Amino acid sequence: MRIALTSIFVDDPIKAHKFYTEILGFHSKEFVPDAQLAIVVSKDDINGTALLLEPRGDSFAKDYQEKLFTTGLPVMVFGVDDLEGEIERLKNKGVVFRDDLTKKEWGLENIFEDSFGNLIMLQKTG
Image 1 (cartoon, rainbow, N blue to C red):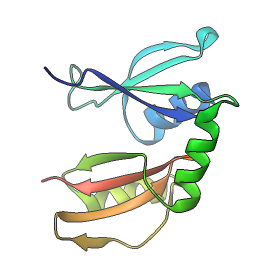
Image 2 (tube, rainbow, N blue to C red):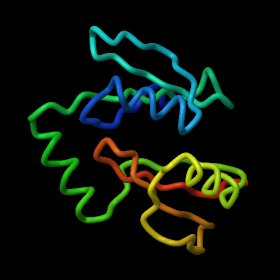
Image 3 (spheres, one colour):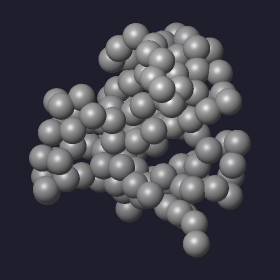
C-alpha cells in the first residue's frame, strides 16, 4: 500500500494551480478549471504521490486552515536536495519565507507561504 493522493485546502484552486506549477515547479496531472479540479505532482516523480488543491469554501476547512496558518504550523512538507538553492530560486520568484534557514536534528528546513492560506515546510532530503 502507498499514498496515491493527498490534498491541501486552498482558497482558489485555479490560481493555486498556477502558483504550484509555474512558481514551485510541479507538473499538472489533472486540471479542469470549470470543475475547480487541480491536481499536481512532482516533476521528479510523475507517477508518485499527487497533490489535490482542494477548494476550501466557507466550510470547516476555512477555520482549520486559518488556525494552522496563524499558529505557524505547516500543512505540508516538500523535500528538496538543494535547500539553499531552492530557497533562493523561490525568493527570486517572490515567495515569502517565514523564518531563516534552521538546522533541526532531522535536517535543514524553512517555511514559506503559498499565498493561498497555507504554510509549507521545505526540508533538505539529499
